[in-house]
Image (cartoon, rainbow, N blue to C red; front, side):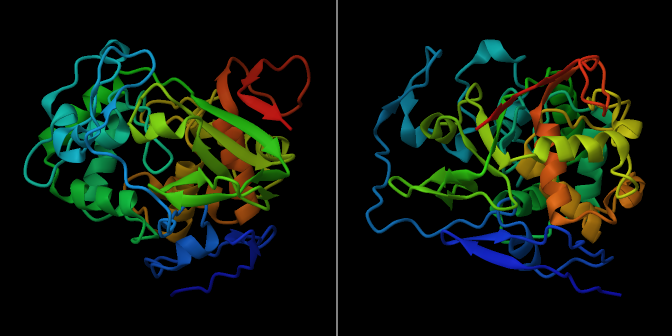
Length: 357
């Protein structure tokens, strides 16, 4: 049985921002139509805007480099067929062939999208430090058609479905062993604010519109590169900034740590007191809020039906759009935690990557 999604939308500065602050995203066991996800979470399920009329194409013959790297190359050499540019080879183990160049037919280099150090970007998963068993299981779910996306028009998630379907068990294990062995380094700076720069969508991420001014953040997360050029050059040492609504961290902490008075289930039960994962259960701390929001939506809508997914049923069944924003804002802000407590007292040793404006 398919159940209607009850949602409102407001247009803010030309961008559609979900505004169902207290309205649940209702569950369905079937794949939602391709428009649903973007209409509800347009800031997470990103559809690229047409390029501006005055946009200039990058010069393919430009010699490019990034800070802290001795490497330089032609811009045209940065393409998926060549694998990822390894700007900082000392920052990760030697990449196996699958990660650096790709595998069998249709299996492209993992490091091109997920980056050589596995940090990932808003449009895809950060794999570094995730449990070996978890990564392998997710690839099996892709192979078996049990992990899907609610927005087939968004390139990276749909692309991953196609890659996962043709990835062999041996290739999946090789990638999992590589990324699981790398320490994840939180690189998202979370900023609470009421106003954000006007952005457009390009490359499946938010990009600031030059001269576009500011607009209300509404109920959304606006995650963008700290340095757009470095991100476009696939520099795996250049992180991101995530603008979140004022008060989101406190509200998210309440939901994550206590279950929000029955609205959800405390994430720490399965993901660990520090949210860095337990056994095959994945880490949440410091991960991309855009990516995390897509996973909560897809779990709720039944798009992720693989092993262990049913363990999330109680956690997601009553979540609203605002809940998702608050949860992913909070988990993204976590750098390293020695003790987790919802009381917000000085006895808690929570280290947050957060700035309040």
